[in-house]
Length: 115
Length: 117
Image: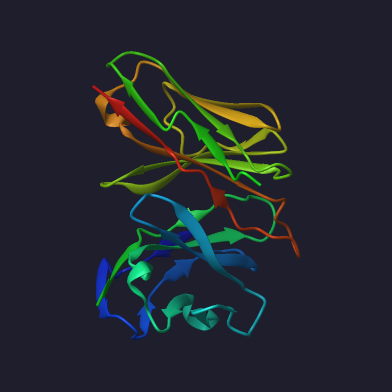
């Protein structure tokens, strides 16, 4: 069975700094997708970035990037030049490439960006 | 593109009453998912449909909860004899047919906040 673990419950950082949020996963699938989502204070959940397990290069979208370490089953989210509006809860998730599309989510990490 | 639509946004029911929640996925998306979110349990998977067929309902409480997708434009989650512990935000999400080479991201609706008194 798949499992996603986010050990950091809450993080506070100063504005304009870089933050890394950790995520480790367990799966028996040979190929899979890894995702990060953001839930804002209003409750809206927004897709941020995705990593395909067969790709060696780390995904980057805007000021979000991933640190994918497949041997460690780890997919960290890096946010550079953080802004106040980055304050939110961040969820890590995974899904097999084919077959069952069920997502498994981590418990989430609450990020607070301080001015 | 209006995104995933969920109605109602808020619903209050009395204990023992029935609640039906509606979801309209993004047009063209073949997979529809239901989740429940609470402070204590976090984001819990309930069930999902692919091309309207139920695929995995492993997260659904076996009694009182049921989900259907009668056509490609909407899905419903029905809770019979609601209990206070059913109070939560129920989220619907949809995605494209996400096998190799095709987008697999889920797009979430705004959720329905269910309060059972």
